[in-house]
Length: 68
Length: 285
Image (tube, each protein chain N blue to C red):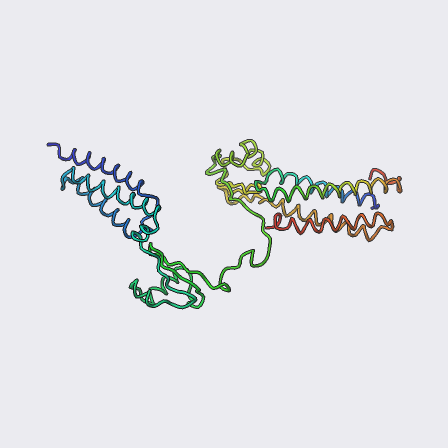
């Protein structure tokens, strides 16, 4: 497995976790819990951005593996 | 003339009257009632019996009933307003154990023996006298004990552990029927419930009880206990997947030679580690 596809997998896991977290943010009735979840969503978003940027660089470096 | 008929009518009307008056007097159950209120209940019951058997004059009977109904309520109101009257009517609670030492003179005052005190403590699941710091006999005859600080049950606060606030769960299905009121109070509707049931592959008729907890997860109990349904583990899975991402990021930071990327991976993995610490009480409990 190339580095790019590994990073892609991690990105997918993180996006999945972000989705679940989003669901719980909507579901929970407690304000404190909700603010913790919202905060976590923001952190997840910044990391998703970082990983996407990194992925672009990687795909530029190893164009033959693009799309994996 | 129609003696049996008269008895029936009297009994029925008195039944309603006594029922209403007990409702008026209050919610406290007999076992926790103060001696004085207990007297009131007995007088009401006896007078009602005498009246329905026509053993006393109807008017004087009603006067007695009314007196014993109004007076306790009036005294209750007065005792709310004034501390002095409250103590006069109900008496004062008696301290039986102070700083871990039994107050013998107070025990005698209540006409209790040491064995009585031990029995009361045992009913509170306290078998060792040395565990008790403070104990008090309430005016309704109940003994309450405060344990020494090292004998008290451990709380999350003692362990300096953060726990997520949890509201009470709401029961949304009982005996295969959807309960609308609790469902609406959660901001959910029957459609949501049907979708959730479909996801689990369970028919509504087969559900005995269903509760929704404060984080919105659904717990089911089925009539057919042979059917195993998955209990929600979504939060545990979520925690595990964030853990996996964190581990991935820190391993990438070791693998890459690019300095910028190394820094980015390290920073992000640190962020996720902090996040995991913060989410732990909410996702794993």
